Image 1 (cartoon, rainbow, N blue to C red):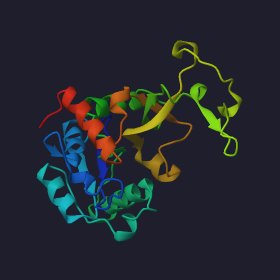
Image 2: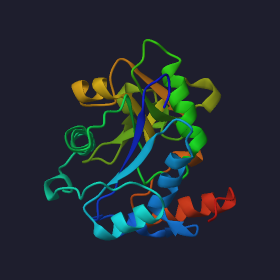
Image 3: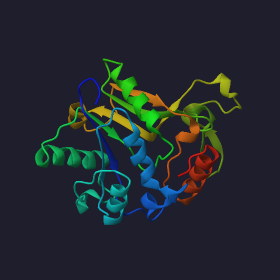
Image 4: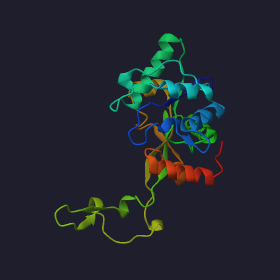
Length: 240
């Protein structure tokens, strides 16, 4: 709880994964992938409840073993490739309201695919959001390096020649000579519940950016991602 308002962490983890089958419960540095997000949420000093929404009995069992609450099995239509994160969050919030008579002032979305995020990241993001009276949401961002638009080109499909992206001049630039640009990464999302339900997104004109370093911005979507993230986490001392 913070400022008298309760906080729920929602961890979405469906059973089907085409990029890396079974990734949410695949062992990473000694524990299932989803466990890293559950433990980060449970370690937060502001989060009152950590819940997992899933369509998989196996994921639900493992989530409960690591201390998460799994109050329902997610309907099949919300475990498809076309279901959005907002659809899943809205379903969970309405379930709590209609079946458990619980309402939360803030929602924290923790994607299992960002295991490098820790309890300090969650708490700092919440604190940053609550310290700005003009903001109602905060999302993880990371500074671009090689993917800065100043370094990008487009290729002519017929001649194979290249041109600067969005009319940028093609020349070698030093990183210190270009402006900072950031990309959305998936480690943490926080929003006032009423605003999220009305806007149906974390991204709007009242959204802040919580900056994370490059190594924390990597998300696990396929085997190559998994190998890189695990190597980085072992190097940083993340072991069960």
